[in-house]
Amino acid sequence: MTSARLQVVQADITTLAVDAIVNAANRSLLGGGGVDGAIHRAAGPGLLDECRALGGCPPGQAKVTAGHRLPARFVIHTVGPVWDGGRQGEDETLASCYRESLRLAESRGCGSVAFPAISTGIYGFPADRAAAIAMAICRAWLAAHDLPQTITLVAFDAPALAILRSAFEKEP
Image 1 (cartoon, rainbow, N blue to C red):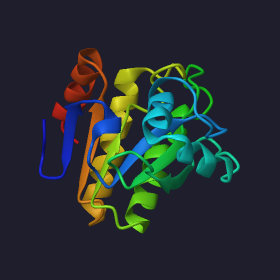
Image 2: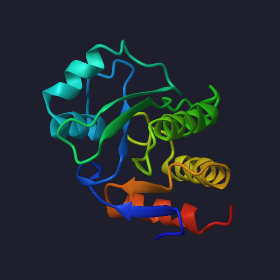
Image 3: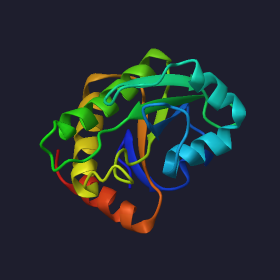
């Protein structure tokens, strides 16, 4: 599914030839499970070395590294919230992940950026709620900024794709 500048796809984010991919990282930025582990494995040991020098990252913030062995020039690492029933500002922290990642992409001159579903894995954020937040932030960003020119929201599997498609089809 695509609009002029926003698209939803099912893919392995580590294979996408975009200017930047976003990593749903943990606070240490030193790799982990899920998409974080997949990105670290695909990028090679240089990514871990570069991440060590960053000193971690708090939830809602983002830091950038080179893409190393990935097709993407950059990896933007962001730390999403751990779901606690929505009582700890999780929605705003997740929204901040998208805004800060897009800010870094813009500052690096990125024309294209791809996001995984941040915080919906082990962190337990409800996928439909996360998709609605991602869609709202991305649409607002695209309405106000020239870069990135395109944003891709990436689903790893068919159930995740269905959730993203549902959020995409809703009016902004």
